[in-house]
Image (cartoon, rainbow, N blue to C red; front, top):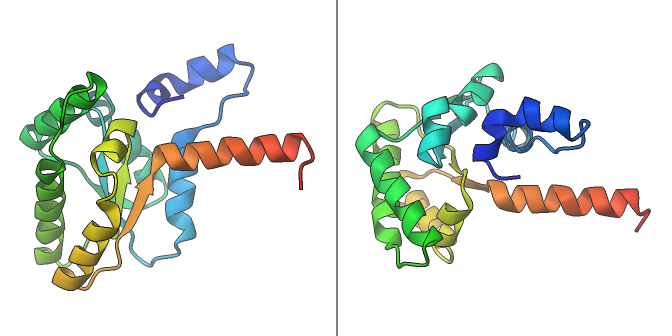
Length: 170
C-alpha cells in the first residue's frame, strides 16, 4: 500500500480485517532504531501526504522533529512525481538542490537534518544512483552522517519478512 493511501489507513485496515501493514509506523520505528539523540527528518512525498501531515504527525507523536518543503518546493516535488508517473524525464538535480537547501538551513539553525525520508516511490526513482553520492556530499560539506529512508524499500523488506515468517522459511 502506498504512502499516500495511509491517509485512510484506519478505514482500509478495518476493511482488510486488520491485515494491512502500517508503513508510516514502520518508517517511524526504523528512524527510532538509529538511536540518535535528536533525530531530525526531512520529509519528502506527495502533496496530499504533505497537506495531511502524514509523516510529521506520526514523527511528532514519538518526539521526532521533522522539516517539510515550503509550498513552492512542494509544487516542484509534486511536478517531479507526476513527470515520473507519466514516464517523462525528471532531473534529479532539482530535488538534490531542495535537499541541500534544507540541510543548509537546518545546519544554520544548529539542528542538522539526520534523516531524509523518501515517502514516495517516484522520489526513490528520481534519486536512483544518487543517494550514496548525496550522503558523501553532505558528509563533506557539513560533517553529517545522513540516513536516507526509502519507505518503499522498507515496505518491501517488511512484506518479505512476513512471508518468510508465515511460511516458516529459514
